[in-house]
Length: 455
Image (cartoon, rainbow, N blue to C red; front, side, top):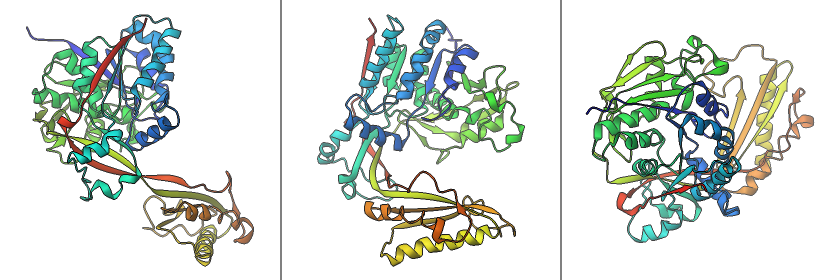
């Protein structure tokens, strides 16, 4: 018998820092089978790793726990299940925090599943000894070049582990570094029984996840023809309606702002795409040139004919390391000849630092409002009566970056007139994290699935 079900999946979090109200709104505005939430980025993993080192109960996206506290009654009433990569580098601690929330709500019977095994930081040296080189995919360097400065190492694991948690009845599934599209693919695998070699349907589920992974970016947000979008104050977040054969419709809840058209979806499709014929994921390889988009009514785009191929025998690894330190400071320069005075201020800062014997690996000078986004490609207007001067440095030496931070404030009294807007104290050195992409054979990675029922 043909499976004629439609599974409705929404994504309410495009990144950690996205709208705190969007997930709750999605649950209130219309029916959903699953709500996905994407919290992680490469830099996030290193930050969470540092948090866990300071406190063994930390290392996950705390915003997710706050959200569940807010919407758990609604989740249970609507029978909507949640999949999130909020576990960061400590999925078990995240589960414990969620369990406490469930008990506070009296939500006996709620099942929380976790997927772990992506965090290989503690195994790096052993894996190197076993012959895994972790060669940098961008420049071919060996990991030994930065091994002592590594802060985090996480594998982009596949979607079948989270699907198993769903099969075991988990109402909430928390993972570490899964892929962004995998948050949507996992429930589809569980619902429709897609096999590891169902390349076309796995590819279709991956494309569905890729389209919605950035939240409202496919429903009018960041759209190049932004003037065509209405309702910016209540922009609808995306919902995909997926059939067992992998065809699906991208839409949003009725009555919300935004826009879903072939163009809004198409712009998101080419986001972070790479080679359009070989979009590589842990689960399959997708041919983006096979995708067909068609308008299926107002705010409805049908996606069909997605083709996929066999998965590779490796996973991608995201490694972060301490690359150095940076500091950035701002001054507002006002009054007649503001741009000319700002140039004098910049020259004064760099000249004074040079006289003090202070040099840097990288420096940045920007005149915000003139050249900070596109460079000095057109002559500035003749009359500018205020401008923001933005100066920055980067260096491996903390002391050198700290010295830079002491040089901006003196311009208030030892620079041209009209220097103002210096607030917040001296610019402080902050860590600069480098990204090291590498590969690892799949047989070197062990994922585990645990589902716990709240008593």
